[in-house]
Image 1 (spheres, rainbow, N blue to C red):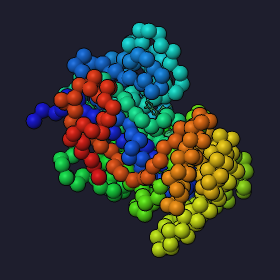
Image 2 (cartoon, rainbow, N blue to C red):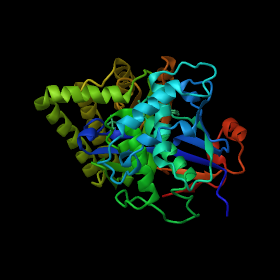
Image 3 (cartoon, rainbow, N blue to C red):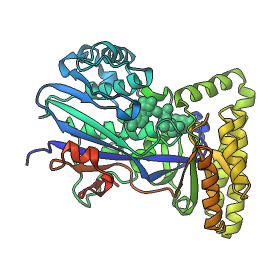
Image 4 (tube, rainbow, N blue to C red):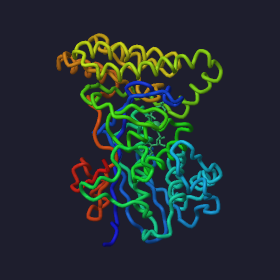
Amino acid sequence: MSSPSRYLVSAPGKVILFGEHAVVYGKTAIAGSLDGLRTYVFFEKRDDGFLELNLPKLGLQHPLLWPISALPYSKVTTVSKENNSLQESTINEELLKSLKEIVLDGNAGNKNNQEINELQQVAASVFLYLYASLEDKQTSWCGTTVHIASNLPVGAGLGSSAAYSVCLATGLLLVLGHITIPNYGEKVGGFNISDSSSPMNLINRWAFQAEKIIHGTPSGIDNAVATYGGAVSFSKGVMENVIEFQSLRFLLTNTKVPRNTRTLVANVRKLHDKCPHIVVPILEAIEGISSKFKEIINSGDSQKELNQNIEELIDFNHYLLNSLRVGHPSIDKVREIAAQYSLHSKLTGAGGGGCVLTLLRDDVPNDDIMKIMLNLTSIGFECFETKVGGHGISILDASTISKQEFLSSENIQQFSGWKHFN
Ligand SMILES: Nc1ncnc2c1ncn2[C@@H]1O[C@H](COP(=O)(O)OP(=O)(O)OP(=O)(O)O)[C@@H](O)[C@H]1O
Ligand SMILES: C[C@@](O)(CCO)CC(=O)[O-]
Ligand SMILES: [Mg+2]
């Protein structure tokens, strides 16, 4: 059977309930996938030896285009090609530097002299880095065109970079012949993050490399949740199910204050290195919150007690994150409005603006939720109610779907034939 001429891949965003930033230092965090907020990437076969990348969500109106022959293959070493271990692999900085230059200068398709900013340059370099590292002479594809659609806000704390990274890793591993679409019902990966031979583990490892290029020193939690889905606790690359977390309801509020995860993580690192005797205990206290959550979520307490305890943990985590200086007045504003209805909130993701997570207790009347949402949207924020859990990576043989159908679709999830790895 011939291999597909088009693939569609999708990966979810994530929400961190407890433990962001501390997880970068090996502490435990609790997170879940956001099934309704996903990134979709369409890969189409080309025969002309070119790579085309479209980044409309980053504000690039025209495609970026490179001849595959322009890739600096002499710089692709075993460091970039062999990616055997999740935590130990490093980025081949020399290759990355050349690719960043190619994005800026050698962009043959940049006919309109598009200005490329740093964020766009990084996103494009990630694509070329994965392509150059994974290229396999076995592939029947002589080039590819890549289109992206996403209902995830970019740079808002919901793991848009991880969803992008996981989609690129999955698509390029398919296109370049390293993995195949799972057969219906076939168990190919499951949840076992430590099974290094599974396709999911391979995808997760390459997505982690991509996250390193975007973030600097990611913990790996975002790409793991985007790959495997579900509701989990995560520490040092090891993931465990926390299924009960899926029963909780949340309000997510996007303050729309732009921020960059790389900068926020680097700022916490500076604070940590300057005042370790203060910051280390704060990180340990945050780990205590995640541990307490795992204890109470399984305790059999009444719903009322459980909610009260979780709200207490939300407040603790909020104040501790503020003391790491990753808060923002817009986040405090959301907290203040939610508190008028006795609801508790904290930042989620890297902070500094972006999204705020509010626990919606079962006893809160729908009317109140509507009022809070109205209040928040009236001052320019965007709200959505959510639960966590659901599929990680999904893949579709898109040979019969045209680029136009993909780009104009209101609901890409509704195309039939999606296959899930877990
Ligand atoms: N749809 C997309 N198209 C292209 N690049 C994207 C897309 N989504 C995310 N990115 C890449 O991810 C970067 C934003 O990642 P960043 O880590 O700062 O925010 P986030 O992942 O949304 O939040 P957090 O890491 O706190 O969960 C963008 O600058 C871009 O490089
Ligand atoms: C801030 C952080 O903890 C979460 C970003 O979603 C960074 C990371 O874990 O890589
Ligand atoms: Mg990110």
